[in-house]
Length: 340
Length: 253
Image (cartoon, rainbow over all chains, first blue to last red; front, side, top):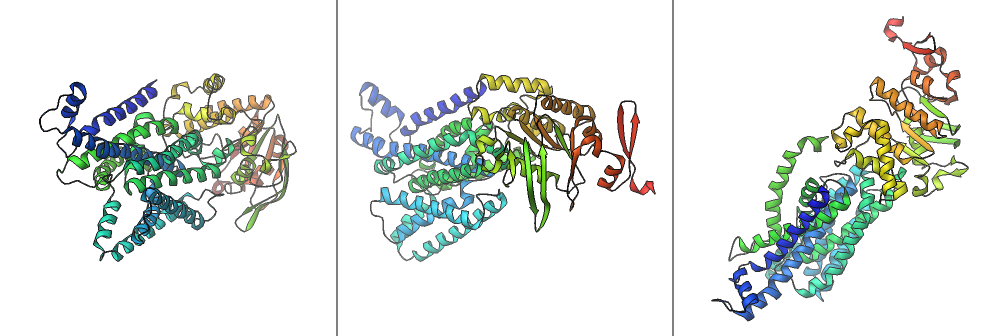
């Protein structure tokens, strides 16, 4: 009973944030203006209906849905990663997955190949994520058979730093090309400013596919957390579940990277927070994590665009700014349990 | 029920077991005894995880069975469990039903789990987090998970290692009942008394030697146990009961 109550609470809070968020922003059009316009069709002072509607439908709503989509995908990817590694401190970034997909997108930018960006960028991101994962599978050796966790985690970290170095190298090459540098840096810092409906339309289906896929794995991930040997004895083909989780995580992560750039910490914080509310069962965890991730990122985006008006903070910077102290706090709260 | 024929287990470069054959029979409890590091866990793990050839469940080679079928035949309790998330005791017991409900527990599964919780007398722990239990309680829960799986073959690695005297007897009684129902129970133990009292067959495992198998009563003698552990073991009979008594090697001289 309590778990279904907390699940409803998570979903309700998501809908609340979804409803409220489009009526705030740097432009002086807020909820009062829109409410009086929609309800009584009166135009309050300083409200231009045409601009107002344009801001709502072309700027704020795409950002809102983009944030919701990215937040839910990232938290699901985080849950998959933690379940896969049986480690509550794992994060998709650790595998080098987001680094790999960033690299591919950067390559695309710097080679000037952005033909149909709403299609090519997600494709590049996905290719990067998959390539990175395959390399990871190859260098960590017999990952399919023996549970070489530490090995997988360490090679993931090495790979992540390799991708990071290559990213920096590409950026340093583009220093002389100002326009390119600006767009690349904007994208790398993470943000939803330039999001269009077209981009969203292209990424929604893969996101939903990934989420449904993850949900179908959820009960098996519960069993997997008992350990690979025990999971096998309970009838789970552990290697298959691992590969599926990795592929699904890459897909979700690639979609986020292509929409908003690499957003750090969301995939780590949200699963933790949600686990505190609904417990460790992966099914509930994913449903609530979806809602919580969406609300968190919508809220963060709201902060990003309204805290430092008229300037905009970058979303990725903000998630790190909120995320890191929050993570320290979690660590302090649970120090005992995490150590054992 | 579980038949091993000419099994060779490598441990690094040296083979731990060579051409080992044994028949674990249904309706009997087989107890593995032997010093630390002799290979008890390796043998049990290879039986349970079925990565090796030449292990047969009723004439069917276990390494060829799909995991989902094997999970209905053989259950496995390793000596150590590391559960990274805060699952409750009831969650873990329900996980034992996974081969039967495939993730969607029905009322019969709930009833089965309740029954096992009653049998083990751990209803007060039902909603506690597994990671907050004492190590004896943890073992009880994991043994409960194996009982929930309800398979013809149950393989347990030192199931009573952390338990107090009376709890160990309680758990052994429960597994004895399983044996009476026709199950094949295989476990490693460090207490020859428990082996003699509850076991039917014994398997003595000593590093670098061919394991000795046979009825417990024939194997658990002063001479053989002393040879197995390398110290002098005395056997004391008191009416119906038999006690084993070992002296520290420093005092026996």
